[in-house]
Length: 189
Image (cartoon, rainbow, N blue to C red; front, side, top):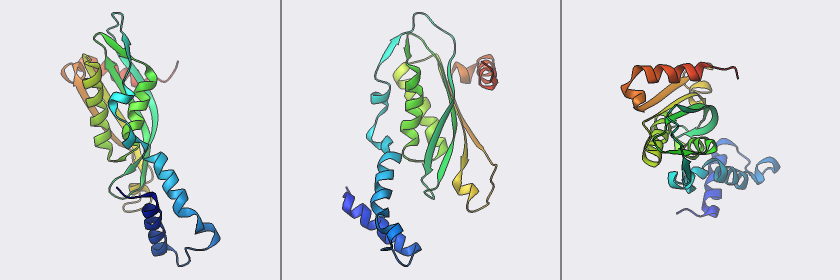
């Protein structure tokens, strides 16, 4: 494992690639600030799905769709170390157990706070819901704008990537998928 001091030294080296004077006032403390921000941005490595989905509740016979939509998230692309951000929609149909709604947002955040690609976040959130809740079905849909597309390369400012994972009844039954998509599109409360 790399020490904090080694990490700060590496950031200083990278700054030297960009800027001739890494000792100037504005950059003097930048290596420490970068490592502090990375500790927060990549905090997902210090969590597990078991930690996040640790407590469930009796579903009391509820057998409809549970949906938390528009979960904002920020992540970092593992290919270019560029940010990507968007929203996730997470749904499941419980069998016996339900989970507190904040846990659905936390499981998205846990996966997003790692070096990632959007496809992996989508798949891993669905895998965790299946494993820890055993639902009749679960679905994860993520929509995100990617910095690596916006500020470099093709430079497409408005491109949104969408990924989905449909499991159980959401995969097997078109009417369940249709109901879910209708609920996601509903914006008025």
